[in-house]
Length: 211
Image (cartoon, rainbow, N blue to C red; front, side, top):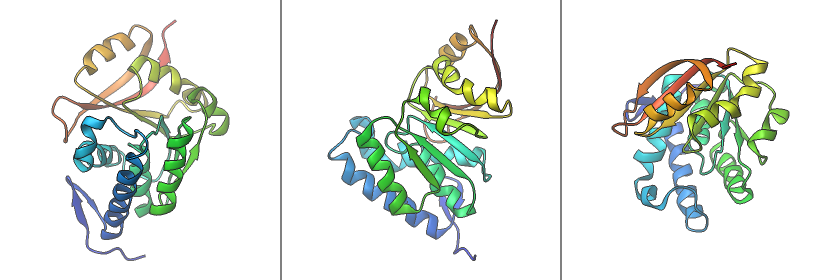
């Protein structure tokens, strides 16, 4: 299928159709955010840069059709953004794990409005591996400390050791890495954020618990 002239999203080239889907998501987000707390109120006014463009960095790091699990999807970051970008490839899928029923309802509406390649799993993270037993990549943003995220991810790692983890982290990321190394062995690639100075995306592979 032919795509229209590509546009820029903070350096990531996307089609006009994909940009229209991102705008549709932003409009829906702003409507729902008036009723439920989807992101920290202090950042809601900077939706495109702080949330949409920040989330899109994840796809730029791994721009291939693969199966993702997004933990604590909340307001759709980064999971729905990844799923919208995957729709341009017409392949790949994102499993959005969100136990809050109101946020899960928002996520379902976002998928319907944008055609994002995703499905919603309104369960606790600990129960999600029973619904989604395997994936190629796991993402999370503003959810928990790195050590806890490693614990959440282990059921999928045990099914497929090649699964990679991509976690957005703020300026305290060095402490989180140090704390996590007390309990976990892993290979780490640190990607500096192109959006928020001092923030990173941590790419983790070969995760194993320390004995």
